[in-house]
Every structure is written in C-alpha cells, then in structure tokens.
Image (cartoon, rainbow, N blue to C red; front, side, top):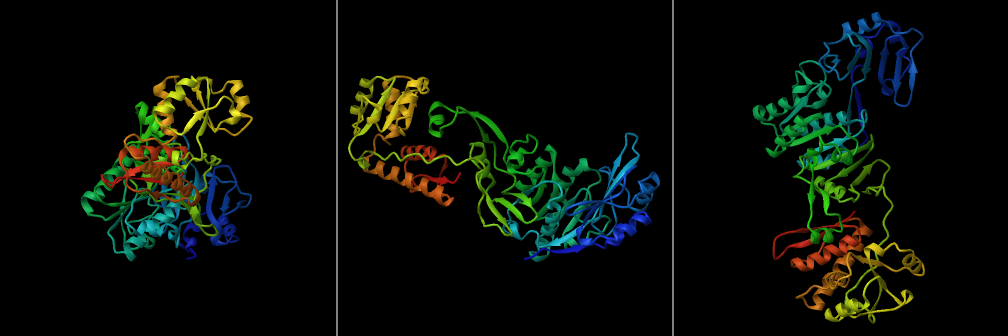
Length: 501
C-alpha cells in the first residue's frame, strides 16, 4: 500500500503568520513544506523535505513573534501550542527571562499506510516499541496505529497525548486517531501518572504513548504491560543498542545486570567470568528501529535480541522496506571465519596428530591413553593437525613462526597439569563420560551440521532432545561458531536451540 497523505488545512497554519510571510509561502507546494522557523533578528525560513529557503529579506521582530503567539492556543509547560482541530504544532524558544525569541511552526499531517511494514506485529497484540531519530515519523505511525486498532479491530484504545501532538490541539481529538480515546497530560512531568490512571479508570486493551524518556515512565510502562494491556510506544534512541546502554530506559527491554560466572560456566560459554545479562523479561515484546520513512528493522523477539547484544553478538533483526529485500539485517562487524570441524573419533581417518608446545609430551600421551582417544603426539608442527600450548606461551615468537608454516588451530590451557589437559581434550574430541561413542558422535555431528546451517540460512534450528551432559557438548560446539545456543523445554524433552548471530 502506498502511503496516502492527508494534510490538515495548511491555510489555518499560514494564517497565523505575518501577511508578507503568507504570500511568500504560496510559492511552495504544500506537500513539501515541513515547518516554518521564526527567530528574532534573523530571516524567516521555510524548511522543505530536502532544503531550507529564506522567506524574503525582512528580519523577524518582537512584533512578528507576538502576532503569531496571540493567534495560537496557550503554550504549555513544554513550550508547545497548537491550532484547535489540527495536527499543526507551534513550539517556542524563550530567553532567560521567559520571553519568546523563536518559534517553530510544524505542519501536521496524517498519513495512511505508514504502518504496513509493522502491521503484523501491531495486529498480533504484541507490545511494540518504535525507535528512530527526531522527525523520522514515529508519532505519525503511532497516530495510524491508534486508528487501525480502534476502527479496524474494535479494540479499546487510549492515547496518552502529552503534547497534543498525536491527536491535535483542542478538546476534540483529531479524526486521524479514529475512535480511539485521548487523555491529555496537564504537565509533561505527570505523563507516568496519566499512564497508570488510564489503566485503572478506563479499562483499555491498548495504550499508545509517545516519547518514554524517564525512569518513572519506564516503570509505568512495565506496570501496564504486566496487567496484560498492549502497549505501543516510542522512546528516546535510534537503535536497540541505545536502549541497552541507557541506564534510565534499559528496563524497557529487560534491564542489564552484572553477574559472575563459575569457572565451568565461563568455559562453557566461552566468555569472561564477569558478564552482563538481561535482568528480567522486556516490557516490549518487539522493537522496531525506523531507519527512514520507508525502511525499518524489526526485532520480533526483544528478549532474544537483547541477549545476543549482551553476549557480544549482532542482534540481527529483519529488514523491511520499499525497494529492499526482506531478510536478516547484516552484521555490522566483519564476519568471523568458520572454525574447522572437530569430528569425534569415529569420524577420523587415522589418529589425530597433536603437537604439544611448552607442555609435557608424556602428560599428553598419558591422558590420550586414559581417554582411549585415537590420537598421538608428534615432534614437529608440520606433522600436526593441531597445537596444544600453555596460554602464557601462546604468543611466543617461536610458536608464531611455527604456525606461519601452516594453518593449524591452537588450543590453550592455563596450567601444565593432567587434569587440565584431560578437560581440554575431552572438549576437543567431544568425549562425554558415561555415553556410548556412537551416541556422542551423533550429537556432535548434529550440532556441527546445525551450526553451519544457521550461519548459511540465518534461521534458528532446534536440535533433538538430549541429556544435560550432551547438551553441554553441543553448547561448546555452537560457541566455537560464535553462535548463541539456549536450552528449551522440560526433561526428558529438553533440547538445544541454536540461533543466528
């Protein structure tokens, strides 16, 4: 559907301007005019979609500003006023004494078809948070969401209209929000209280709120969502990363906390012991990053996207937009090379050849015998399939020269002890004590194959149910591919799901 623009009577906005400016604006097409800027002592300016143009040679005086102020409604605490029955907005700039020295007259428009790219998320009943730079169309989308949910789906919709920007100035809401009800906010600082009042007094199924920007408003949004009310809102920030990094608004997407992992858990995840994790379920089920007026990135599962961000993985998301292929959002970082497969013993042709560097060859050989691994040590790196080395010696110039002779994977351990060598070799060869070799081999092959398919297709893959020890092994395989793996379900059907990065 092509967006269809409905512009409020532009003459009502132009009529509040001094006569000379009214005549100058007649030269510009109405569909290109965004706003008129009047600053004391400067030339008036018309801002169009792609350029700004000075209007005449008369500099703005106090009399010009006073004429406009006297023709519009009363300015609120947020220094905004409007023209009753329209979506036009007038914003004031004041000096230190409170006197108005600048005005921005913004053209109000209702646009149909602006939510086509996210309509499925909105209609599903999910709570959706819109992000994007100022002026990109977040409020316009909120306006149409209100109309669609109220008129097309007959849901009880309440709009929290702090600055009268969604439903226009005056006591009667603008037709652009359809049959949705509108609650005005006496003072911007009281927005959170009106949000709660709407839920307690008017039984809404949907609440629409613009510009969530304070901790109190974030808490009110969580309260609303926890009561089963669909919440459609906007927040300060351009991307999901902005919210995760914002201590005031991070709660909207689940919040962030620092946790300390045990040694085994840190090894399993392939991470440091101190990491950041999501604190609780997100307030909003989905997050939409508005790239421009015709293109968005949809994170349909906020929790999963945030978890990926905190794990140092690109959050992904689905690109939607005119002229754009629909598909996963590209990773902004360079893609990591695929790790070489490490099949279990039965998949190898001949024994694996290991070159120990700064390690006791006797200790490695002893562990190989104890684990009954089809592997042996070699004395020269050019004969090896892999290198085992002490972590503290991994960057030795000699080792680096040896590695330059061939593309060998290097696996490190902290101490030269049999226990650490055993744990490392068990991980590398997918040894799971207490399980038949064929079962371990099948689980390892399944994880290896799924990890490569996830990277190729960009879609999550569920593995077969396994017990906890086999799932740990599959976790390690997914981590080698820099993928996020999560256990889902209950025993005995608990299984691993590998997600794209």
